[in-house]
Image: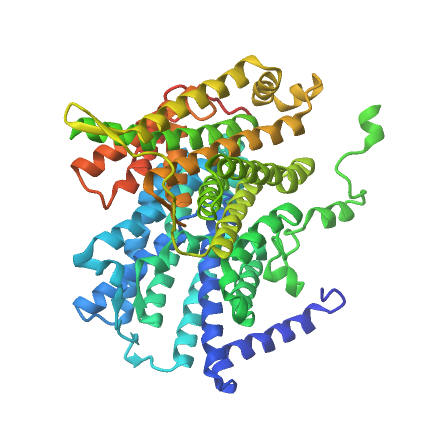
Length: 345
Length: 291
């Protein structure tokens, strides 16, 4: 894309873009656009948290909406019954979602591939059924209404702009976790599980530990965004956290690129804006999502951006983080893994 | 009450068994869980319900439903999975692709047939007779018998015919089967076709039994039938049948004795327990992963 630009220019462009994103509610007065932007930010965070499991660890989870729902209900119930403000209810939502992440992570230890996908799908359904049938706690199918607007460290959030900034702060927290994990030995261990589980364990990677850890962190982050969702929409019911929601988040991750941070954000933005642009086709939303997932897998399984990192976009990645082509160029070889003649000889 | 729940469970279990066999066969040849399979089951129910509502005779509605599903199963393999096989896609990609196809098909059905439940015209006499203190309708007898006949026919096909031998060869080793002259693509597509046709029959029986088809049926039945296939040992045909009937009966008992609100969770609980205690299932063989 911006191949010819030097890192300096790229960083300047990036900084300007970032600034434009941060101060968006200041110069855009159309409240509808600010609301869509907030949804983009929220779904970016959700897609990033799912990307930890599906992109970095290579395990398909269809239960992401369940964690979001657990977070949303925890936060809404605490603020409704006990009148707690947003920060403590959100922290509790994170904690409860993390506990459920551990619970789901334990059966997930022994499973991978289709089995894990089905178990997470079933988990999503059981959580939804519980939300639906536990009337005294969740008000069942009627849903919870009139959830309080968030009060963050004494600041009452009222305007759409306020919600947008709150979402941005939460996205920054998610980004902090996901990028730190992906750039550390923990991230490399998680990615080795994706590449080959048996080989990774033979190399001394404690698969059980990393699987449970990834599930827990991912669940906690989704729970946090669920808490935001509850206080932003101010109405939640079990149907908001069903399998469809899980599939939507999954399709964002896949469109953007499995295992890449900027990709997830791009995927979430495209798939959040697209249904709004095609208002007449809003009934086609899930149809499009399904098609996106299948077509991407058939023709471009790496997604739009693949595993591109922010550092690569900015052209400032460290020297040891070479991609295979650059590595072979540096070594003065051809960019092919095998030399055919040598094999024949 | 016990006998009544047993009869109801066996009836509904026969639908599950037919769908579970489809999961099991596809898993056998490709080691892939076809997520779109439960949507094909739903498609089968919908096509038959709409055809009957439109005044078509039963045999034509059934044929139309089976034909549509078989075609869709075939297209799933030819248009989506075969190009991926040629490219050597990873297993996760297949899985995600079928999730996408499933979502696509479910929403296509909603778009074409509307989001309201469609009543299933009564075509079978619901005369009942009593056994002890329970009653059983001729529809239930017919459903269970038809399932057993279809299962016997499928078993014959898989264990006694040439194409069945090819299917089993691919299940053991796809490359070796190809080298031995098996047209693997053809056989895999045939497996999809056969599984989808059975799912269509299951969808019709399900619609007949509950008097209607709705958009939830694919999703809920998908979970239970996968649990059935795993319980019986995925890849094993008799296992899938036994698993299907078992899950049907367990669910019926649970609804009768414990709570009907959570009866859809029974399949999931069974699935978790089986995967934790005996992942190979009742009739499956334990697999060892090699590097």
